[in-house]
Image (cartoon, rainbow, N blue to C red; front, side):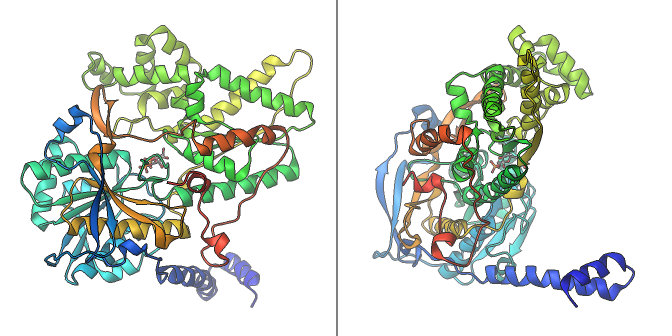
Length: 576
Ligand code: FBP
């Protein structure tokens, strides 16, 4: 029976259980054998991470720490960046380890592989070591909600996407939670606690390591750089894991849309891409797909563009292309751009202050229950400039700006439909401009977000994540606390990648959060002087009117080396 015939039978004769079973059996067999091959894939291990027993750290350099930050984290003495080297005459007592692991924040492809790397390495250290997974993010740590991870558990998720093995969450570990977390660590007699997360989660990690040290507890806390946004970087951290895969997934989608657009030549596509603050994802996807325009939030900010300026820029593009008889085009919009537009940025800063717990008006604001009443209250109490900016937004978007904050106090830009906002404001602007003849525009919008976060990790992310997991285990065995795992030289073959421990305190800076200045792990924005952005600037003028769209292939895991093992432009153009 042909597969198509079977599908039709299954759809129409759905009372016939046998047909349905056969149909679903075949499809799940494909998924099963694909996943089976991925599960049995063994990533290449960088040579310095091969033998985790005899390798040793050497001091590479001492970082300069802000004295105020140093004072807050006075129990985390070491400011040294340390590089791992294979071999060494060290004699360590190898007792079984008890290590806790938490996945924190949004999923990023490769999280399961980090856990597999960690599990394998602690088992190599001592076969009776155990890995305790805290469930659904930091709240699992606070509530001691956990699961002991066995080898079959780990084997079931090797090199698969998602964070579902133990779940994730965005709970912030506040000061009042520290005692509960310490109780949890005590209850499990944890030697190590590995926090896999982005800037906010690693901020929690550094506060936790300080608290453990201050209380003379021997739980060593290690952070692992995760986020598809790619903004957790430093001189030693070229990129966070998940970025490579997410960009490849989005680029494939954008490339497909571009080919569809070119086939019909009737739509303008406004595609919003994830990236809460930084535009690394949009920049990478632009280099991969060659859109007619890609906004880069950091440039928008540097050029102090207002919302009106941006809308006029896009309308100019549409007008120019129209005169070339092109009534279609591709525009990429980073979700975070909204916070970088000069008038909207001022508005958000004012809203954040007004809604902070210590603001005198916050109690009156809380008295209003509905989103609409609360927006009216805000409109009555903000400055004239912010009032003007807020009034430019359709009401439902204005409400999102006022209300949606995550537990860390960030505006939830993934909920703001910037692509629709821009598309409709550009339509209005074109109408306004047309004195004699209307410049027609027909728009389609799309959001590339959640579908990239739990994709099957690319070959690059599998290798990278496995190495990060192994390195986290090495840090625990060396009793190093308050460090982030870093793998450098990612542009080289995997065997030559370098493993480094970076003090978390060296990544901190003061930022305004919930109405107060707080030390937080800094996000790295797109460097407008850097090689990646400069490359984009060199190319973008030719993409504007000519149609040079590129359609990147789907992620391949098996096949020719140059297709499987390639990493993104963000790595290859900027060797670290
Ligand atoms: P992390 O920084 O936690 O990795 O999350 C990044 C991100 O994917 C952003 O790009 C996006 O704005 C946000 O998560 C969406 O978060 P949520 O899952 O809470 O909707």
